[in-house]
Length: 115
Image 1 (cartoon, rainbow, N blue to C red):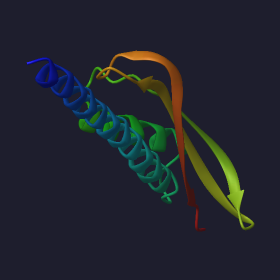
Image 2: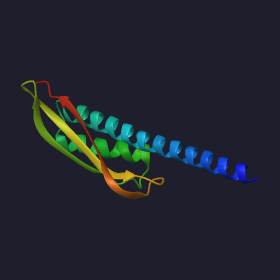
Image 3: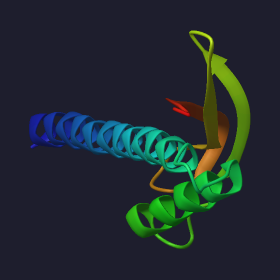
């Protein structure tokens, strides 16, 4: 009986760690995809960086839920001499489900504006 308790405790801890790592990677990859998509959207001929920010927020809320809080910012930059848009997304590090316990997760996406 004591062996079962010790082994099952380790197996449960390992399982919870894997689930948590999967959640963090999912949030990071979703943020990265939304930032890149928002940057591409903001570089279209009839769009602005504000449209890119709105698109990024829309994608994040659609993928991670309306309760997900993230800071989204945009800036005009250049890549290889071409004008570009960079969208940065940052949020608290999701630990223990979507509850944050500290730290910050930040990603950015860039796209060139062709004229």
